[in-house]
Structure formats: C-alpha cells, structure tokens
Length: 244
Image (cartoon, rainbow, N blue to C red; front, side, top):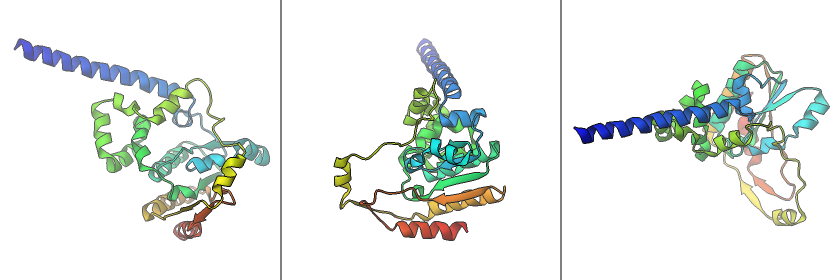
C-alpha cells in the first residue's frame, strides 16, 4: 500500500507539473506579439488580410499599405498546411471586418502536413483548429489532451516565444537573390501536383468570404524567371474552376 501511495503521489506531481508548465507557456503565447496571438487576442484589425505559405511572405506589406492606403494583416507561415490556412482565415473573418482577402494559391501544392501538430499551440483558441488536428493528426491531438506541455513542443511555439516582446511585422521577404543562387536556378525545376482536397479547402474559404460579401482574390506570387514550374497553369485552372 505504501508503494502504491508513492506511485499515486508521483503521478499527481507529474500531472500538476504538466498543467502548471503548460499554463505558463500558454500565458506566454497569449502575450506574444506573434501574428496568431495578436489575431486571437483581438489586435489583428486590417483592411486586407493575406493568407498563404512562405510565398505569401513575398507580398511586401509596407509597399502594399503605401500603395493602397490600407492596413494589411498576414496569416502566412512557412509550408502552411492548407487546412490550417483555411480555418485560420475563417477564424480571422469571424473576428474582423476586412475589405479584401488575398490568398496565394501555391499553398494547394506546397502544403506540409508535418507542420500540423505545431498548431496544437493555438488549439485552445479555435474549435476549427481543434477539429482539423483531431481528424488529421489524431495521435498528436490525443497526446495534447493528456499532456499540455506537448502542445508547445513545436516550431510554432518557438516563433511565438521569439516574438514575445516585439512585433513580427518584419517577417517578409525583401532580399535580392545572390548571383550564385541565380546561376543555380538555371535549369532547375519543380513539378506541381494538384491535391483535390486542398482545392476544396480554397473553395471553402471562397464560399465563406462571399457569404459575407468579402472580396477574395486568388493570386500567384512571382517565381524566379529562370526557375521552371511545371503544371502551374493546372493549379490555376483547378482553383479557378472550383472558386468561380
């Protein structure tokens, strides 16, 4: 009985420690200046919302704001899973009134499911994210229910910590390609696939916007001219067919 008591005590300490550390990490996320923290905290108001993967970071927000006189807010993230991009955008539109949504459509092909567990960090703020993770990465979803610390074992949380005390409004691409990389691009290529599920994710977003009379534009960020992108026209065609 004494041994069993110690086991129960030890498990209780582990459980309490997990919840305490998890609470502290969640508190840091809530106070972060990272884009998703600001969005869910009510500090993401804008006229133009941008959603996409890292290629969406090519849209130079300071110039867009200067050219249009309108405020922008970006939900873009490296290798953003298409399902997460859609539900993040819907969460945003539930909270803020925007005039235009810009969606970079290479997210249809350049979507990385390995990043899905990273969004357990923001699961407490979104029933939609919770549902996507439960359906797509159920093992990670279950583990995050048992252990709250597990929700922060990812790069998305690390980003939130990095931007704990300063805005992430410097997170866009404004560099010039080096001569060496330009030469390496010559003859290089990538072949795009068109997963129908991701096309339907963008259709879902388009329908959500139009039901709220929000203008949505699907765009393709520029590729380096010497870099060949195969089947890009097919991606464009399928997105156009699904979202007209």
